[in-house]
Image (cartoon, rainbow, N blue to C red):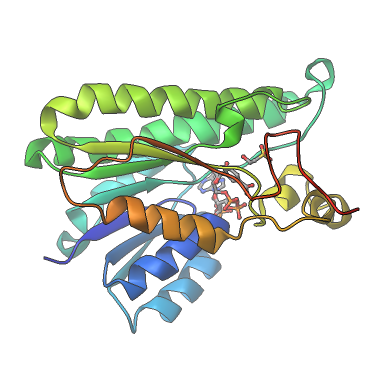
Length: 251
Ligand code: NDP
Ligand code: 8X3
């Protein structure tokens, strides 16, 4: 039977690459994000391949999250796969100089937003005793690096939530796992450095970073395992990267 996947942060980067790959695998899609024009563009691109429904909301707004999910038409309301991907880093400052707005954004989006979306979708998975949740964490959820402070805290929280979900949902046969990427070239650094393109580009200079499609491939591998297999926690880095601070660069 055709499955339905709900992907947050589908307007760019990892979420968009995952939507493209899932569509080619005949998975029905609910694609989410704040930039409606990008969602409409992606919907038009994917509709020849699969059924696509747009939900346009900010994951920080708990009422918007639950209203959007409750408004899904019947065809899209049975969610088999949840990809909790929406998130970003905002700023990169030493802790004593950190921006309170950046801290709010990272904790509200990466942690609370993930929780709001999950809370709205989990009851139907529990009722059906089936479902698969992939939480997009980060190497920043496994180690802390200089000036990463609050972003790393948000991704360590995702790591803990991933474990907590797996424990609490174990009894219902719901699969829960995290995919934790290292450096992936997306809009991530543009957002982190607030549109400073030169600074953003320099993050990926002198080595071959991961592409969003590399992560999409892994997400598809995880969700396409047989029902008795749950990939609980996976870390993936570019070959040039050994840790958050050790990257072999040619420049
Ligand atoms: P992008 O900036 O390319 O994509 C981020 C996505 O999140 C966008 O689709 C954006 O949509 C969505 N998003 C951000 N804020 C909100 C919000 N408030 N409400 C709803 N949607 C939101 O970055 P990536 O693809 O790289 O990031 C995806 C995930 O991967 C994030 O959780 C990130 O932390 C994680 N990650 C990224 C790595 C990297 O090196 N790139 C490495 C490890 C993890 P819109 O703006 O339209 O709302
Ligand atoms: C994104 C990877 O190293 O920029 O989560 O924090 S990093």
